[in-house]
Length: 405
Picture: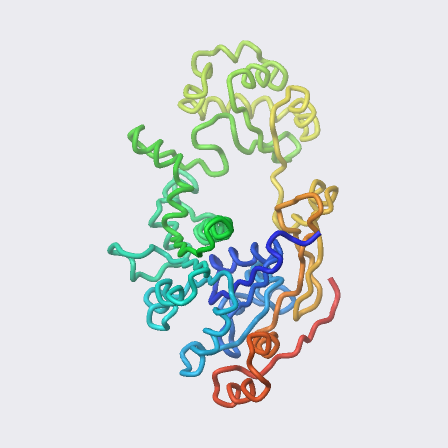
């Protein structure tokens, strides 16, 4: 069975995380994604690190199943080349620096003027208009502007999220926005200009703390790995040193937890702990009671009691063993993807549907598909050679694939 976006052509002038995350998911669903990169150096995320067989961890995560075209967009002959690609595209995605798309004639109004079926998706830091429109925006900067570090970390020190959450949020909305626009085009025959900003996306994800602070008079407290507004909900240590994150979400669970796990059913009605709001207000006292009980239990004993009481819990795992997680392994969620450094272990796309075969095509080298894509767009061998000689294109790259997992 063909994947749902088979036949959809996406041209993306992209770099870093947000736009590549959106287009990789389009590629996961079968779209042909043509990634425009700078000659020689390519997407600057290629240089973030060299930890994955000489490749960047960000780049291998975000760019499988794409075709790389190395084109210098500032070169005078690049515009007509890109125009040929856009003429055959269904979707155009870009996350250029503020003002760069307009200077290159790649703003939505310009590219859609003669292509009414084209869907454009512009991913920016702060969106069009407003006092921040021309600011450069990187993930941590947007996290700070949205207030995320103010509610993350310990009581003594704020902290950023451990992943590029502003970029990821924007990428997710760009992905879903393009899907919605493709569905709309099926009904109307017309494309649409879609815009997503990192600040808008992360502000949406900050909805609960915003309402809590705006109407509660104070923001949620920074509580480390514990939940800011539910207790007990966070990591606790058993007597043998095993850390278990347990979650008591409601009062019936609290009653079961007190009786079956703590062995103190009378604690459920203690006025300090009878409701979640009271448990949060007396968190330190509550944790002291829980810790006193858990020090006499091994990790396995604690897990057995939690399961008997139907209390949710999780292991506090390290990220290096994620591809060995028993649930992911049991469900065959680990695959392989080829790369210039050799085959790599990789998580399969998270969207699962009967009959869809996960797409795990290779991660490209810079410019690996330049000639093939330009020939597909109608340029002849002499045209490609001329463009290479002019400097608009980089030299073609070889695959160089090999090695072990």
